[in-house]
Image (tube, rainbow over all chains, first blue to last red; front, side, top):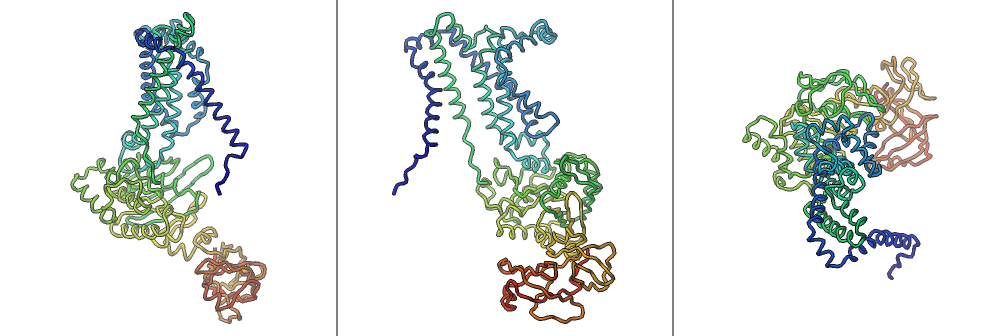
Length: 265
Length: 345
């Protein structure tokens, strides 16, 4: 006899909540994607300002991910492998950019890089300008994206048994040799996922960027500008193109990162 | 070969203090102790992968205490094999060759020889993913030996293996040690492994070495109650010594002329207790009337708990003996122990 399943109230609760969550996320997005006419989408695709802003969003986010990779990897390794006094505090500091309201991030960076601060004066003296520049955008995006990279990669490093590194060193490999031959080949997937997470967070940033660099305009700033100046109809097509381009990029990244082989251990 | 002097490892929850070990060249030395005794911390101190807070470690006369692991020339094999999952069998075994100055022809020949010796030549090109525990441990051994370490450390190499692979790898270890003549230092919590493989042993408990000596000596003459229990003595009992006798509860054992100064326990192996239906009258044998409390079936052997006066003893009998003597719970019998089977601790 076929067993009846799903009679438990918990089944209906989970089903209801799951449908609610998926609808809550998808419904506004589907509405937004389907509302603009094809003609509007076509016109927007030919708008060089829009294309420039989407491209700027993508490459500044990509740069933020690359910078996070370079400076975040050794730091994530340190957090994964060493215990030291104040480690919990350091880990909380890393999470701060996730919690701080976005405009506050912008104001904080501007306060440091402005001409009233010695650091800002020094940077300007060597030709580094933050206010209203691509450098400023990348700085802000790295600030908000770095925690996602560090946390993801730290978890990846923690999943690699330290004994593998011990064996490598007992066989004669130095610490850097061990990292390159054992740790990196086993952790690069988590680094890629970390970069995707960092990139995803960076590309969605608006509040901090709008304070540090209104111009050159990244896509979220342009969408906001078009919304306030011309209304919903002019801002939606830009948003739709941004979503499509991001979706395509992230799907591509997932495809190029091979699936991990299942271990028999 | 390995000289450890006054080694101190200080952690907030655990401390190893004043550890002194002397492992001789080409010896198979076993560091024994229960889980949490600090055995692996000592291994990590020797390999350089764990902290050292005091003392010195010398290998072949060279002070290696502050050398990085890659400069120590010490091989290690872990119980979970620690094979590199992204490399093939051959790549695992040859991993360390590039860091050593032997000519590549010599190295390759040596690796081939090792693989033949360990019976893993036929799996050289395979991925390590779907190999058996025994094969993985052979690969780990080949990898460690490929770079000619002066000492091979083995961290519970048999613990994670199925019983049939355990016997197989135990034989492999014995053969390798005999053929290669390098110093083996193995950590284990299983005394039977020490009996089979080891020449000398040190027993570690709560960060202190309780006894060190030849395996046979430690087995037959444990010096502390902990060691006695660890080497399988079931009956370790507090005793008061008076001349040639030892009082255990309300029983008085004749211990002959054994020196009992500073001793406060007696220990009797379960297999040294004889159980008889009739009183046995022999000159050097202690005989007591007792009652069987419990018989536990251990398969081939039977563990019998007997109560003599207020003390409970454990004896081991074969199934045949149990049937022959017709022993069962609540039966009154006699327990006999030769005084040479009594160990003073």
